[in-house]
Image (cartoon, rainbow, N blue to C red; front, side):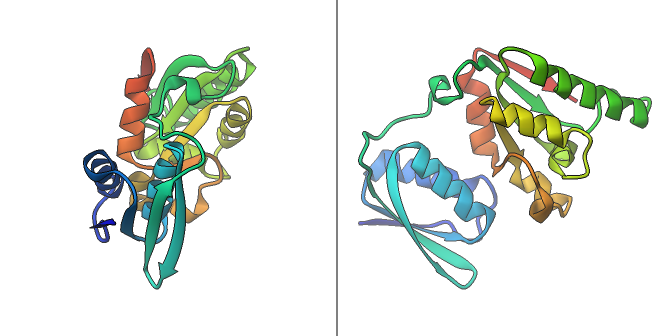
Length: 197
């Protein structure tokens, strides 16, 4: 069995190490990883490829055991998104739209996301990076709209490095804590990417 140790590696390196090990040596695979966000990111990456995983947690780290799942191994494609979603990814880098007036920018961002909710077809995905992660906080005026977009099939990814930087990882109330590998992959797999902020 191939083994890799991704403990203490910065995001998104644990996911990249898992990906590289799969491409090079295949399954079965054993991955040592830090608990918390790194564990969740690597586990989600593996499961998205139809890989069966089991986890043993020990103190601050965990070991993920990977084997063939009951479905064929696959790569992520745009078709894995919710039914009816447009082939568009939106990357939001700020908690407000515009720069000159914070209160106006907050209103505009809430309006923008609220308008997306009202569309017949939501975007396939929204990635929140830098200060954009603050939109996923429960007291954000935009978090309700993000939750509604998720219900309509839009993937909402929240940059784990950014959330950690702002000290809000445990307070995120909508979306999935993610990593730059997954966010970059998301941007590249859709026919159009819109960046705000």
